Image (cartoon, rainbow, N blue to C red; front, side, top):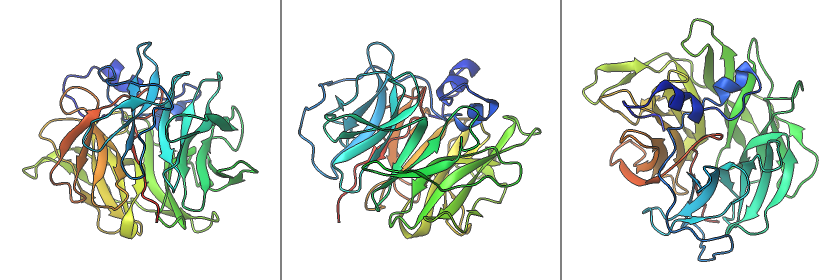
Length: 346
């Protein structure tokens, strides 16, 4: 998503934006995604079956009409098949038992969160004026409220996965304008997210940083407070890693995230939830977009999006950044290009 020497500014801006409502959205949605991927292959319709727990990754791709859809592939990139067909759909998140997927969709003319069974059947509306779902082990779904001119907008809320009354989880601090990209810890006790604050001197005009909050909304605290550089493989400086976004909570307190210049280039890092042990994982010799990290269910691998080969792709690497390799083509816009690995139930 974030890699690619050859990408023009129009393509870069398109991929990381989901809405054009306010200036805030231009940042949140700074979808670190790359340009549109090649067309999908091996497409079959919803209800195709052949789904087994822990065996699939949900990715995004463009259909023949240029709309963003959710597909399933195996970790080796095979058996790709399409789940959604109506409108644009993205940001998939699996239920803890691996039987359902929550996702963002604009199919009704407004942003909303839907759920569906793992084979694409039984698609149903969960909550409107919302996007960016993340399904917790407590069977709750966190999301971003996006109501127009609503003080609750661009804050993170939580709703029971079966439907019910939402509750507000995050609050803005200081000059912050939004909290976005929620991700639950494996045990569901905490949630990480990005908080966006205006930064007029920054290239993108905003500064996102990674935060953590307890499940009940208490103890909201900053995680990324350093201002390092992204390094090339030889250790020399490539570009600033001033901004941090797209966090994914993994095992043993680790959070994987993107860091770079918002609306521009960056790399994947990881950090402990207390702010210690910040480590760069991806590294390229040239400016590129490496983004949207997702931990495997067992914590031994990390998926991420990259445009290092000139198109938007999903790659996989070991948790220390070693052994990076191609998995599948990917796409982004109007949602980020987040892949999602099917969990293995306990």
